[in-house]
Structure formats: structure tokens, C-alpha cells
Length: 199
Image (cartoon, rainbow, N blue to C red):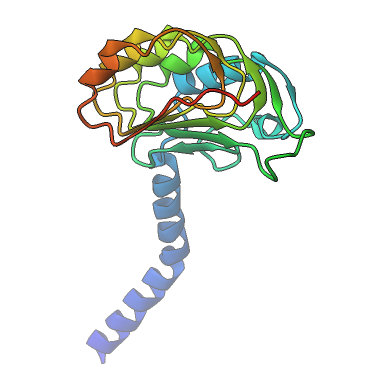
């Protein structure tokens, strides 16, 4: 009988403690989930500041403290590190939709997203200026898609440093000059599109 009472008491103690125990586990789990790197957040906000008009309303979602919480449209992070690894901004809707666009430039600060694997800024139509040389810092990049904007200038030869690049599309812009021979060093490149913008 004494043993039976002891077992019952033990069960009661654990049932009383279990809510606190499960709560502490939940707290530990949530606190160990990484939030967005401050460097990455600052780089994204500098890009946002370089866009003077955004009728896609994508950048209007970039407001919370944590750019990895799923609320920043077009931004994805590595869940184990909290570093931004995908930036994907594509114009929704039809090809002949003239009301949806971004107007501005590509901020060189995007070159500070050192863990970025995919960058797609496509179909924004009124993003002008050059492709920043700082993009050569994105050494983890496997996809660089900057098509159907209004980018100008030459293709930076420094893009030849992106040794992991598999897809490069700069089509539908106003780029000029020759294709840099350095792109020939991109041994992993499987897709290349440099077609000019249709007039």
C-alpha cells in the first residue's frame, strides 16, 4: 500500500509540473530559433530605400524587426543560421501589365547578403542604373536572374567570380558592351540568357 501511495503522489507531482516543464521547453525552442542577421536586414532596407516607387507593394511588407519571420515578401532565410539565402521579387500578373512595377536602382548593399544563394529581381520594368560590382561578393549564389528591368551599362566582368552560378539571366534590359570573357570561367553555368530588351 505504501508503494502504491508513493506512485500516486509521484504522478500528481509530475502532472502539476508538466505545464511548467513544457512551457520551459517551448521557451528554449523559440529562443534558439535564429532571427534575421542585423547586417542582412540593413542591406535589404538600403535596397528598399533605393526604390522610389513600388506598385507591387512587395516592399511595404518589409517592416518587422525580423526579416526571417516570413512576413517579408520575397525574402527567405536559412532556418539554422538566420541568414538571408533567397531574395525573389517577381512582378505578378500579365506581361502587358503596365501598372505593376518598381522604380529605382539596385543598391550595392545587396552585395552584403553574403549567404545569398538565389537572387531574382525580375519584371520590375523601371529599375534602372548599372548592375553593382558588389554582386561579385555573393559567392554562394547559384541563380542570378535580373531580367525584364531597365538596367543599363556593361555586364560587370567581376560576375565571373561567382563560381557556383548555375543560372544567369540578364535579358530584357538596356545593357551594352561586350560579353565579358570572365563569364567563361563559370564552369557550373547551365543557363545563360543575355538577350536585349525588345524595342
